[in-house]
Image (cartoon, rainbow, N blue to C red; front, top):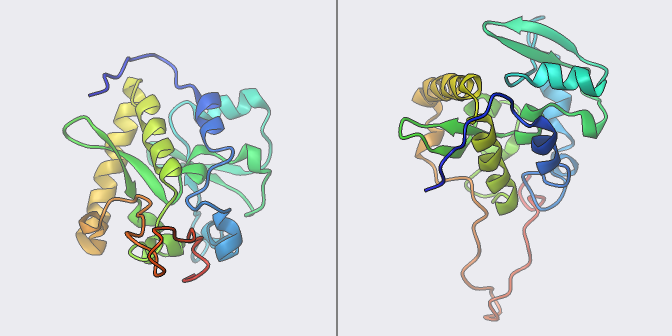
Length: 205
């Protein structure tokens, strides 16, 4: 079992770099669904703000990097990042990079990459999770990000609070009853060779 070494600062530069070349699918998932998360998520409903939560200390990191664009609004104890749906890819906040998964901190202290039920109305990968496997490297990166965030007390509290909210949503959607979000391999190709073309998600979406 990996022991978490605690620190007082989350390394967001390293976390952002984890997802520079990774998306949920082996191909750019935004090209499959037409960028549904960017196109629909930030429209909100009836004027209510809809956006991505910033992780503890992320706002300061983004300010230090000189990232521009977007609006910050209060959302309880957290801050929501709201944009027009178009941004520079290298400036995406961490929540956008993790989407539609979340590194949930469980009662046993483990970090697990889970489907975020709050993404249900936006992301087809969540609604069609039984049919569209995710890139294994992406799932592992989400877990690694969670472990880094959990190295700070504030980060652990944030992950635990979000995990509790996810559990509340799952009382209705029950995504926690589904298989873990991993890239499932076909047992045997139809031609018997054992080779099978990689699925990109376009076959279903």
